[in-house]
Structures are given as C-alpha cells and as structure tokens.
Picture 1 (cartoon, rainbow, N blue to C red):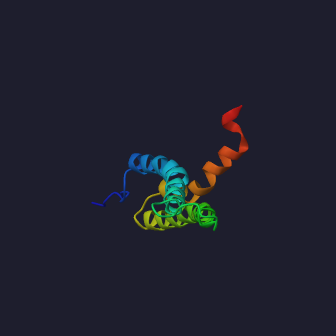
Picture 2 (cartoon, rainbow, N blue to C red):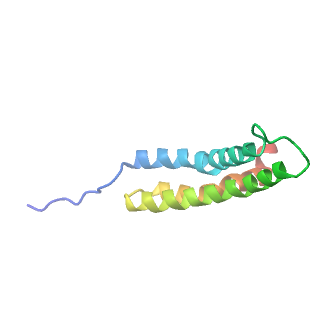
Picture 3 (cartoon, one colour):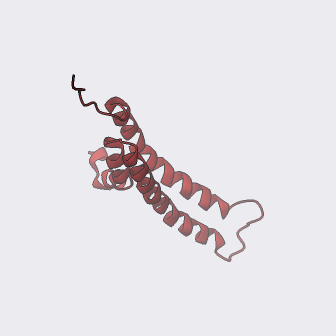
Length: 111
C-alpha cells in the first residue's frame, strides 16, 4: 500500500491570516513606533529647546530609523517564515515596507 503524499507545514488559512496581519504591522505600525520612540528621545525630560538643534537631529534620525526597521523586520520575517514552510507570509513581509507608502502616495484613498 502506497502512502499518499501530504503537505507538511502550516495551514493555508493560517498562512493567509498571518500575511494579512503582517502587511499593516510591518508596513505601517512598526515604522511609526520606531519613529515616535526615537523622536521622543529628543524631547524627553531635561532636553529643553536651548537652540542647539538636538531635537531636530532626533527627528531626522527617527525618520530614517523607521523605514530601516521596517525593511530589516520584513527581511527577517520573510526569511524565517520561508524556512518554516509558509507561502504567503514571506511575500507579504517582503512587500509590506513598500506597499503602504505606495498606496498612500498614489492618492487611491483620497479619490
């Protein structure tokens, strides 16, 4: 009696649900949280505006750190989930840092 080959790995429904969850989390929430945390460091207690421009430096660093964190997290999730057998999640993780900015800058939501 021959055995029927079966797919081993996560269920397709779980894979699709995680992929849909990863799109807004990796593309929108993570960059905003990183930007907010880094920018708030420049306006914390004891960092008054004394004209040295340190708050602007933290703002600039936060604006660069948000997308970098989104790219790094997207690559990390894509590699790890691909090794675990997911099919949709690696694609969503790789596209998430680019998809939300593309949708917001295209004006699709404001028509």
